[in-house]
Image 1 (tube, rainbow, N blue to C red):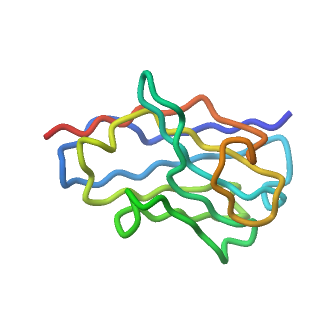
Image 2: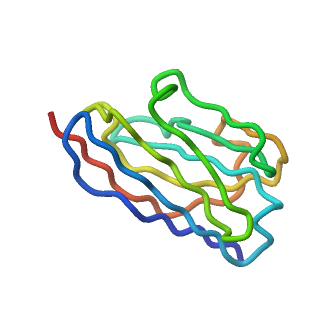
Length: 124
């Protein structure tokens, strides 16, 4: 059974930084492309960042490009999302996801496993 557990959320002031972590268990981590999504109440879950199995390729939404960085360590079975220059509109529940596709992917439908989410609140 594949499990994804996120950590690192919390409250931060605008302009600050935060790093989210996601540890994967129950399967071979390097078999998965990984991604981060976020969601606010009443809205659909939106893509934030994705990284390929090898870590060679990453993709970002336009709203976070240049501010967020996704990375992974296949030995530690962990993927991170480093968030800098945070804005109030970055507030939401952040979800880690794993896809059996090898390349970095951007849609909810392409991901097979999900974590429970961690809340990020950015105050102005």
